[in-house]
Amino acid sequence: MKAAGLVTTSPPLAPDTYIYRIISGYERLLSISSDDSLRLIDRHTLQHAPPYTFSQIHHGITCLGALEDRGILTAGRDGVVKCTDPRTSKSALDISKEPKSPILSLACRGALIAAGTELTNSQATIILWDSRATRQPLLEYIESHNDDVTELSFHPSHASTLLSGSTDGLVNLYDTTITDEDDALTQVFNHGSSIAHAGFLSDHEVYVLSHDEIFSIYDTGDSQHDDARASTHAFGDLRPQLQCEYVVDLVSSGAQYLDLVPLQKPSNWSLDTPNAVRLPGAHGEEIVRSICFCDDSDMVFTAGEDGLIKAWQFSEEAGGSTHGKDPTHINKKRKKHKSFDEHGRTRFNPF
Image 1 (cartoon, one colour):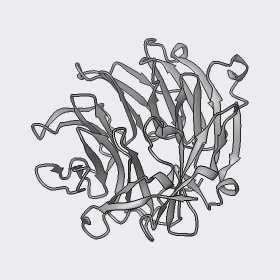
Image 2 (tube, helix red, strand yellow; image 1 turned 135 degrees about the horizontal axis):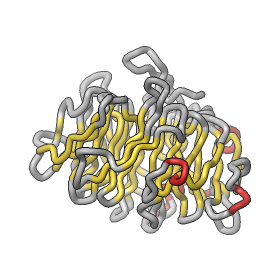
Image 3 (spheres, helix red, strand yellow; image 1 turned 90 degrees about the vertical axis):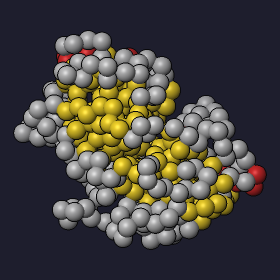
């Protein structure tokens, strides 16, 4: 097991404030946190301060993304999608659809914005807008899922192909150039359990991770899988393979560290555990919520429920440069810590 060194740690947020997600954008780190704030953070010092802190941007912020050069996308349980221009500190977009439903997932590609909602009044909806004309949605898919839409992702090469995942256990692919929902739904993968994360590994491969730790890879170009009954490579329950307690994109173990385990494909998909890299100490007793790789440096950033962002440096002993590695090919393993939201419900519910 190789190790990476801790370089620096951000100033703490207010007590009981935790960070949901971090991504890279505008030559900074972008973060959203439980105080409903969006922050732009210097990648070298991890400092965050006005005017790069946007407070109370939503009532219950849930999602974060970047709309190319137009601004930073956020969405929340208030049913609103916002685009904030960091150069002017003003809102570039503020869109929603009545009646509003809590938004749980968000994706963008070019001018397209896709939002997935919580099941509300027996309906879970995927809404697509053109960011250049947001008065009315371009499309709405209201029948393809019958539970919360937890994941959305656009295809890396085909901008009109959209992936969705839901707690109903289905992962769907759509052709967004088609208006009719039945015709737009081009492929369905029945993972069999609630979807925590899903996305594209390549032009023809989709990965799916469920809330009960089941991990599979599906071939989108193989017609024998169109019936959604089989996966190209079924890893099954990752807990015994990674020696962890549960998986929610970041995988729990008993100790206070975080491991980066490469997912490789020399001939068939496998977990390259001998070349795993450990981040000693991780975030202590607190859950690691998010991880971000920066393409132009040998750095990895982590964010947790301790309200901190930490920067880690890969050394030669830790496997050298991360340049050229696709972060979607990395499985993250972290320690377990049960926590609750403001309603007393467990976050990251292990369905």
